[in-house]
Length: 275
Image (tube, rainbow, N blue to C red; front, side, top):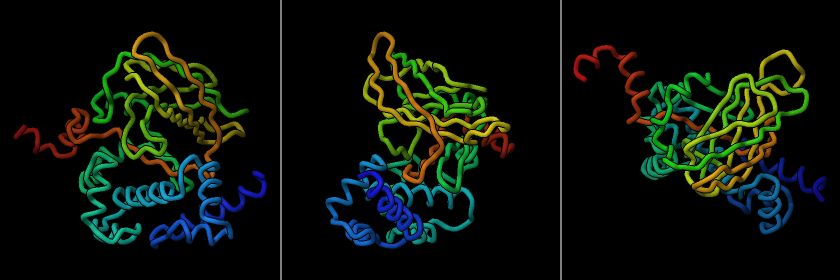
Protein backbone atom coordinates (compact mmCIF):
# COMPACT_ATOMS: atom_id res chain seq x y z
CA UNK A 1 0.00 0.00 0.00
CA UNK A 2 2.79 2.43 0.91
CA UNK A 3 4.43 1.98 -2.51
CA UNK A 4 1.21 3.02 -4.26
CA UNK A 5 0.36 5.85 -1.85
CA UNK A 6 3.69 7.60 -1.56
CA UNK A 7 3.99 8.81 -5.18
CA UNK A 8 0.56 10.42 -4.91
CA UNK A 9 1.54 12.24 -1.73
CA UNK A 10 4.82 13.42 -3.25
CA UNK A 11 2.96 14.63 -6.32
CA UNK A 12 0.57 16.62 -4.12
CA UNK A 13 3.48 18.08 -2.13
CA UNK A 14 5.14 19.16 -5.39
CA UNK A 15 1.91 20.88 -6.38
CA UNK A 16 1.78 22.70 -3.04
CA UNK A 17 5.41 23.81 -3.32
CA UNK A 18 4.98 25.02 -6.89
CA UNK A 19 1.55 26.66 -6.53
CA UNK A 20 1.26 27.68 -2.84
CA UNK A 21 0.45 31.25 -3.91
CA UNK A 22 -2.73 30.05 -5.63
CA UNK A 23 -6.06 29.37 -3.86
CA UNK A 24 -5.48 25.60 -3.66
CA UNK A 25 -8.26 23.50 -2.14
CA UNK A 26 -8.37 19.94 -0.84
CA UNK A 27 -10.41 19.06 -3.91
CA UNK A 28 -7.70 20.46 -6.20
CA UNK A 29 -5.04 18.32 -4.55
CA UNK A 30 -7.17 15.18 -4.58
CA UNK A 31 -8.02 15.69 -8.26
CA UNK A 32 -4.33 16.11 -9.06
CA UNK A 33 -3.65 12.56 -7.83
CA UNK A 34 -6.99 11.04 -8.94
CA UNK A 35 -8.32 9.92 -5.56
CA UNK A 36 -11.26 10.93 -3.41
CA UNK A 37 -10.83 13.85 -1.02
CA UNK A 38 -11.40 11.61 2.01
CA UNK A 39 -8.86 9.02 0.95
CA UNK A 40 -6.33 11.65 -0.10
CA UNK A 41 -6.61 13.53 3.19
CA UNK A 42 -6.12 10.33 5.16
CA UNK A 43 -3.10 9.10 3.21
CA UNK A 44 -1.51 12.56 3.19
CA UNK A 45 -1.80 12.84 6.97
CA UNK A 46 -0.39 9.33 7.36
CA UNK A 47 2.68 10.20 5.25
CA UNK A 48 3.37 13.71 6.61
CA UNK A 49 1.80 13.78 10.08
CA UNK A 50 -0.39 16.77 9.23
CA UNK A 51 -3.41 17.51 7.05
CA UNK A 52 -2.97 18.91 3.52
CA UNK A 53 -4.33 22.25 4.72
CA UNK A 54 -1.78 22.50 7.54
CA UNK A 55 1.04 21.53 5.19
CA UNK A 56 -0.04 24.27 2.76
CA UNK A 57 -0.16 26.81 5.58
CA UNK A 58 3.31 25.76 6.72
CA UNK A 59 4.70 26.28 3.20
CA UNK A 60 3.03 29.68 2.89
CA UNK A 61 4.28 30.91 6.27
CA UNK A 62 7.77 29.57 5.59
CA UNK A 63 7.90 31.48 2.31
CA UNK A 64 6.57 34.61 4.00
CA UNK A 65 9.31 34.38 6.64
CA UNK A 66 11.94 33.81 3.98
CA UNK A 67 10.82 36.86 2.00
CA UNK A 68 10.65 39.03 5.11
CA UNK A 69 14.23 38.08 6.02
CA UNK A 70 15.88 38.04 2.60
CA UNK A 71 14.12 40.71 0.51
CA UNK A 72 13.03 44.34 0.77
CA UNK A 73 9.54 43.62 -0.53
CA UNK A 74 6.85 45.42 1.45
CA UNK A 75 4.43 43.36 3.47
CA UNK A 76 1.52 43.84 1.06
CA UNK A 77 3.59 42.43 -1.82
CA UNK A 78 4.65 39.47 0.31
CA UNK A 79 1.04 38.81 1.30
CA UNK A 80 0.02 38.51 -2.34
CA UNK A 81 3.01 36.37 -3.26
CA UNK A 82 2.26 33.70 -0.63
CA UNK A 83 -1.43 33.21 -1.34
CA UNK A 84 -3.23 35.65 0.97
CA UNK A 85 -5.60 38.33 -0.30
CA UNK A 86 -5.85 40.51 2.82
CA UNK A 87 -2.93 42.24 4.53
CA UNK A 88 -4.96 42.51 7.73
CA UNK A 89 -5.87 38.82 7.80
CA UNK A 90 -2.29 37.77 7.05
CA UNK A 91 -0.82 40.09 9.67
CA UNK A 92 -3.26 38.84 12.31
CA UNK A 93 -2.61 35.15 11.53
CA UNK A 94 1.15 35.64 11.26
CA UNK A 95 1.38 37.54 14.55
CA UNK A 96 -0.76 35.01 16.39
CA UNK A 97 1.19 32.02 15.08
CA UNK A 98 4.71 33.46 15.22
CA UNK A 99 4.53 35.79 18.20
CA UNK A 100 5.98 38.69 16.19
CA UNK A 101 4.40 41.00 13.63
CA UNK A 102 5.73 40.82 10.05
CA UNK A 103 7.57 44.12 10.65
CA UNK A 104 9.16 42.85 13.88
CA UNK A 105 10.20 39.69 12.05
CA UNK A 106 12.57 41.79 9.94
CA UNK A 107 14.70 42.73 12.95
CA UNK A 108 18.30 41.41 12.51
CA UNK A 109 18.17 39.27 15.65
CA UNK A 110 15.38 37.17 14.16
CA UNK A 111 17.70 35.92 11.41
CA UNK A 112 20.56 35.61 13.92
CA UNK A 113 18.53 33.12 15.98
CA UNK A 114 16.75 31.37 13.11
CA UNK A 115 16.50 27.58 12.84
CA UNK A 116 15.26 26.48 9.42
CA UNK A 117 14.75 23.16 7.69
CA UNK A 118 13.27 22.93 4.20
CA UNK A 119 14.28 21.58 0.77
CA UNK A 120 15.77 25.00 -0.08
CA UNK A 121 17.03 26.30 3.28
CA UNK A 122 18.74 24.47 6.13
CA UNK A 123 20.16 26.52 8.98
CA UNK A 124 21.24 26.03 12.59
CA UNK A 125 22.79 29.05 14.34
CA UNK A 126 25.99 28.56 16.37
CA UNK A 127 25.12 26.99 19.70
CA UNK A 128 26.89 29.79 21.59
CA UNK A 129 24.53 32.26 19.93
CA UNK A 130 21.52 30.21 21.01
CA UNK A 131 22.88 29.94 24.54
CA UNK A 132 23.33 33.72 24.63
CA UNK A 133 19.59 34.04 24.06
CA UNK A 134 19.15 31.79 27.09
CA UNK A 135 15.79 31.85 28.80
CA UNK A 136 14.92 35.24 27.35
CA UNK A 137 13.04 33.62 24.47
CA UNK A 138 9.41 34.71 24.78
CA UNK A 139 8.04 31.24 24.03
CA UNK A 140 9.93 29.46 26.81
CA UNK A 141 7.85 28.39 29.79
CA UNK A 142 8.91 27.80 33.38
CA UNK A 143 8.77 24.21 34.52
CA UNK A 144 10.19 21.77 37.00
CA UNK A 145 10.51 18.72 34.78
CA UNK A 146 13.72 17.12 33.58
CA UNK A 147 13.77 15.33 30.24
CA UNK A 148 16.52 12.99 29.06
CA UNK A 149 16.36 12.46 25.30
CA UNK A 150 18.19 9.64 23.56
CA UNK A 151 19.30 10.89 20.14
CA UNK A 152 20.01 8.25 17.51
CA UNK A 153 22.06 9.87 14.76
CA UNK A 154 21.89 8.63 11.16
CA UNK A 155 24.13 5.72 10.35
CA UNK A 156 27.67 6.69 9.28
CA UNK A 157 27.02 10.36 10.07
CA UNK A 158 29.69 12.70 11.45
CA UNK A 159 29.39 14.29 14.91
CA UNK A 160 27.02 17.23 14.90
CA UNK A 161 26.05 20.43 16.64
CA UNK A 162 22.59 19.45 17.81
CA UNK A 163 19.59 21.41 19.01
CA UNK A 164 16.41 19.86 20.41
CA UNK A 165 13.29 21.85 21.21
CA UNK A 166 9.94 20.94 22.72
CA UNK A 167 6.87 22.32 21.00
CA UNK A 168 3.12 22.31 21.51
CA UNK A 169 2.61 22.05 17.74
CA UNK A 170 4.09 19.38 15.45
CA UNK A 171 4.67 22.10 12.83
CA UNK A 172 5.81 25.00 15.03
CA UNK A 173 5.81 28.61 13.90
CA UNK A 174 7.32 30.09 17.07
CA UNK A 175 10.02 29.05 19.52
CA UNK A 176 10.01 26.05 21.86
CA UNK A 177 8.72 25.82 25.43
CA UNK A 178 12.16 24.41 26.35
CA UNK A 179 15.33 23.55 24.46
CA UNK A 180 18.82 22.17 24.84
CA UNK A 181 21.84 21.61 22.67
CA UNK A 182 25.25 20.02 22.45
CA UNK A 183 28.29 20.53 20.20
CA UNK A 184 30.04 17.67 18.38
CA UNK A 185 27.42 15.15 19.42
CA UNK A 186 27.12 11.57 18.25
CA UNK A 187 24.41 9.08 19.24
CA UNK A 188 23.79 9.61 22.95
CA UNK A 189 21.69 11.32 25.61
CA UNK A 190 20.88 15.00 26.01
CA UNK A 191 19.19 16.36 29.13
CA UNK A 192 16.89 19.40 29.26
CA UNK A 193 16.04 21.02 32.58
CA UNK A 194 13.16 23.31 33.50
CA UNK A 195 10.65 21.62 31.22
CA UNK A 196 6.94 22.28 31.87
CA UNK A 197 4.82 19.21 32.47
CA UNK A 198 2.78 18.06 29.51
CA UNK A 199 2.86 16.24 26.20
CA UNK A 200 5.16 17.85 23.65
CA UNK A 201 6.57 17.28 20.19
CA UNK A 202 10.36 16.99 20.42
CA UNK A 203 12.13 18.21 17.28
CA UNK A 204 15.87 17.62 16.96
CA UNK A 205 18.03 19.31 14.33
CA UNK A 206 21.68 18.40 13.77
CA UNK A 207 24.33 20.10 11.64
CA UNK A 208 26.96 17.47 10.95
CA UNK A 209 30.64 18.12 10.55
CA UNK A 210 31.91 17.67 6.97
CA UNK A 211 34.07 14.76 5.97
CA UNK A 212 31.94 11.62 6.23
CA UNK A 213 29.37 10.29 3.81
CA UNK A 214 26.27 10.84 5.95
CA UNK A 215 23.82 13.76 5.70
CA UNK A 216 24.99 17.33 6.24
CA UNK A 217 21.80 18.06 8.17
CA UNK A 218 19.47 15.68 9.91
CA UNK A 219 16.16 16.04 11.69
CA UNK A 220 13.96 13.93 13.93
CA UNK A 221 10.55 14.10 15.62
CA UNK A 222 9.02 12.31 18.59
CA UNK A 223 6.12 12.75 20.99
CA UNK A 224 7.30 13.00 24.61
CA UNK A 225 5.47 13.24 27.92
CA UNK A 226 7.10 15.21 30.75
CA UNK A 227 6.05 15.01 34.39
CA UNK A 228 6.42 17.85 36.88
CA UNK A 229 8.68 15.76 39.13
CA UNK A 230 11.34 13.16 38.52
CA UNK A 231 13.12 12.27 35.30
CA UNK A 232 11.17 11.80 32.07
CA UNK A 233 12.71 10.09 29.07
CA UNK A 234 12.24 10.04 25.32
CA UNK A 235 13.96 8.95 22.14
CA UNK A 236 14.39 10.66 18.76
CA UNK A 237 15.77 9.02 15.65
CA UNK A 238 17.38 11.51 13.26
CA UNK A 239 17.50 11.18 9.48
CA UNK A 240 18.07 13.28 6.41
CA UNK A 241 15.25 15.75 5.70
CA UNK A 242 12.49 14.31 3.51
CA UNK A 243 10.05 15.83 1.04
CA UNK A 244 7.21 14.85 3.36
CA UNK A 245 8.55 17.11 6.15
CA UNK A 246 6.60 20.33 6.47
CA UNK A 247 9.08 23.24 6.31
CA UNK A 248 10.12 24.72 9.65
CA UNK A 249 11.46 28.21 10.36
CA UNK A 250 11.52 29.27 14.00
CA UNK A 251 13.45 31.95 15.82
CA UNK A 252 14.41 32.22 19.47
CA UNK A 253 14.35 36.00 19.24
CA UNK A 254 11.72 38.05 21.03
CA UNK A 255 11.13 41.78 21.06
CA UNK A 256 11.44 41.95 24.84
CA UNK A 257 14.54 39.77 25.33
CA UNK A 258 17.76 41.21 26.78
CA UNK A 259 19.63 39.45 23.98
CA UNK A 260 17.56 41.33 21.42
CA UNK A 261 18.14 44.62 23.17
CA UNK A 262 21.92 44.02 23.30
CA UNK A 263 22.03 43.22 19.59
CA UNK A 264 19.93 46.27 18.74
CA UNK A 265 22.18 48.51 20.83
CA UNK A 266 25.28 47.08 19.14
CA UNK A 267 23.80 47.71 15.70
CA UNK A 268 22.53 51.19 16.63
CA UNK A 269 25.02 52.70 19.13
CA UNK A 270 23.05 55.93 19.43
CA UNK A 271 20.31 53.98 21.23
CA UNK A 272 22.58 53.47 24.21
CA UNK A 273 22.57 57.19 24.99
CA UNK A 274 18.80 57.24 25.42
CA UNK A 275 18.42 53.88 27.17
